[in-house]
Image 1 (cartoon, rainbow, N blue to C red):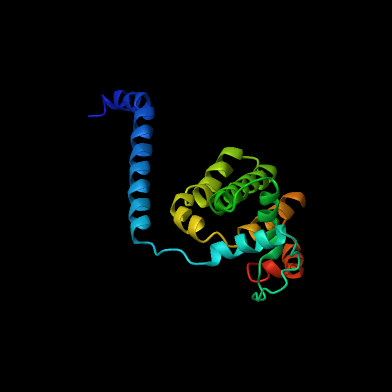
Image 2: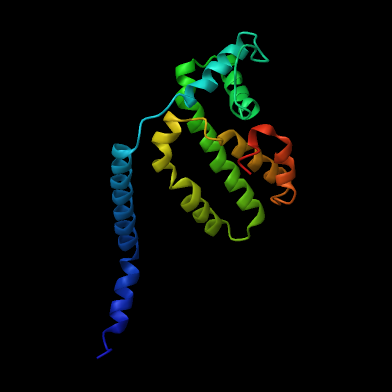
Length: 188
């Protein structure tokens, strides 16, 4: 009954790459299908994404304190507006910033997350796959909302991850730091 069992095991070892490839292909097809469905049913963006661009344009033209602007208490001045002002100084157009900045900032979130995990982990590949599953793979589902509503606290995430990375991967006391930063008060 079990005489051909070693042949089955050796056959599975030979086909391991093929099985992995088939599951990876199935995963990618499912992810693309779900993304396209989400893209089709998601609502349109709002004006929040352009407010930071207009603020950055006004700051770049000399209105550093944004006189004449009526902003809410959470205006994201340090976490969203100032990086866009720097991009304007480097020659990016407002339309380019509208689409490039969110993708660039999300890339920084993934990069800093990997730096923190690799600094603290002994098993780097397992850590890599955890970050990919939690931050990297969901990113395609956020594409539409990130591009249309780029004022989504990505700057606060970058500041927090940068501080955690510089503190050696320890998040002790990070909440106290963020309570001093008015832009990030409601995020952490």
